[in-house]
Amino acid sequence: MNAHLVKDLDKLKAQILRVAAAVEENVRKSVRALRELSAPLAEDVVYSDRKIDEMEVETEEECLKILALHQPVASDLRFVITVLKINNELEHIGDMSANIARRVPFLLRGGKAPIPFDIDKMTSRTVYMLKSSIDAFLNGDEHLAVGVCSDDSIVDEENRRCYGNVASGIAENPEAAMVYINYLLVSKSLERIADLCTNIAEDVIYMKRSLIVRHNLDEAAKIIKMSPNLDGSEA
Image (cartoon, rainbow, N blue to C red; front, side, top):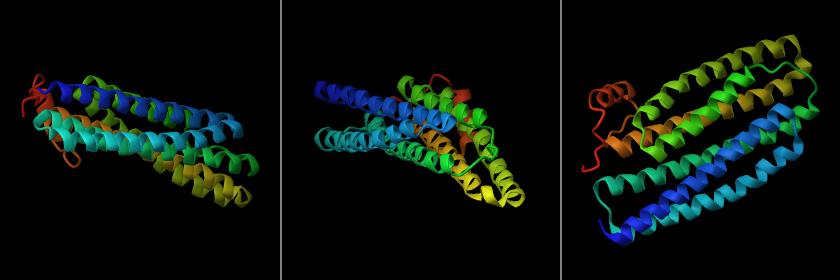
């Protein structure tokens, strides 16, 4: 492999991991802001999202530069494509964190109402999925990636439960409607973060196996289990 390409790929990996670290920190801060109903922390999340947007553009530019200068093939090409996709997904996760933070002032002003979803279960699972999807990318761990995809159903179910609880809560206490609606928006943002983490995990499987698994994860999981040492690095 060209020494300059190796250097640029290493630089790109470090760059996307910096984006991931910033996004993970912002997700954790948005969860804290929600739990504590902290307006200052929520403002910090929204402000930090602007920096994440800048980092996303810089990383995309680096990917395009590598594609233009080196014209990578096989596993190197898949790596760059994967970084491009993960970079975009991380930026969207950052947006969802900011959306959660923006609900905090409305919740502070809206009066009291019970949280219509299991906040501990939903936030902890979402943060876990984000960390695991990035770890799967960092270590090329396709088994961990499959596990992340499987976890998505847990968050989906909690989000569906939230919809039902919001409907019944508003029916019982119409004055708290805006509080319930804002919690529903929080739940939807958490569910969307989980979806994006699943996308990252699917990208990792593509990077390692050259398999597009968006609509056929079960079959991909069988292939990975049957041939655990195959990573497609020569393909």
